[in-house]
Amino acid sequence: MVKGLAFIVTEAIGEIMGNVALQKSLVDPFGRTVDYIRVSVTDRCDFRCVYCMAEQMTFLPKAELLSLEELEQVCRNFMALGTRKIRLTGGEPLVRRNIMHLIRNLGNEVKAGTLDELTITTNGSQLYKLSDELVDAGVKRVNISIDTLDHDKFREITRWGDLDNVLNGLAAAKRAGLAVKLNAVALKGVNEADLGEMVAWAGDQGFDMTIIEVMPMGDIGNENRVDQYLPLSQVRAELSKRFTLTDSTHQSPGPARYVTVEETGRRLGFITPLTHNFCESCNRVRVTCTGQLYMCLGQDDNADLATALRSGGEKGLTEAIIEAIGRKPKGHDFIISRRAPSAAVARHMNVTGG
Image (cartoon, rainbow, N blue to C red):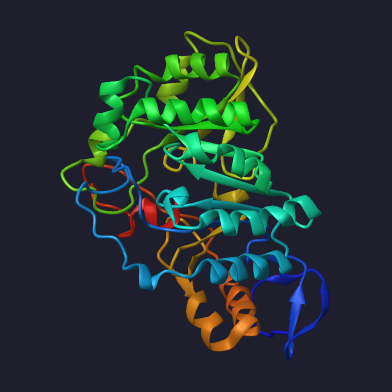
């Protein structure tokens, strides 16, 4: 068993390739069980959303990315260490070549009961052609990033996106039987007047929805996050003038706090990394497409899983994961203000999928 690590080993089930004991669960130094990983399969995206990246982005050379087989091995090692929920993100995950191969293999674990959930966060641009395949592969739920139903504003926010294509994708997902949740980033002076219509439309479509505060991550070019930032306390107050919002005890794998919209019967979540952080219940870590494990979205500390896997095999990978969980910080330190207008971390949201 690995010694000197600041986390709790809850159960040993034998040795793996030497004297590293395989654990059934990982608990960080603050007593939080880590059972959920978000895996970015690519940093590339077919949109250029103003809160996520600059319009002229330089993406990683494809040779630097983990292969799909390596990404699968990382996921399987985490599963052996107690992970029950996996979310595939990007960039835009569905633009990676042959991504359905990875999705099918992980989906088989859902069908076998060894994984509770495999979900995809996507901008929806590929769903018109992939929704049926996703269902067949074992995916039951998708999160769609969409910030407005206004065509002109959608183009302004995404720079390159086509709203009709995304709406067709949403319709295809619904027909295929995927549970859909909309994710909207609240942008001051851009889409704040649209959020009420989105909540109503989501209810009509049978979709849940989550609204997210903008996060100070990466250089976004000429955009100013201070000008973008809209506290969700204000958003909720405005929505409460139109809808009856009842606090809900529902918990998803992620950090959203939910209410029930009584007029539609659907859930509405609020993700508030600035006004009310969610660190006390953080159960997740993030793996980038190059194999960097970030223990916290808002901190730069990371572990190089690619080198660990390539030089040490499964044993080395397991050791690296265990060691990294022992360094998971208590929380992030996001601030957006005129005094601190720059990004809290240099990496863009497309690196770790937000």
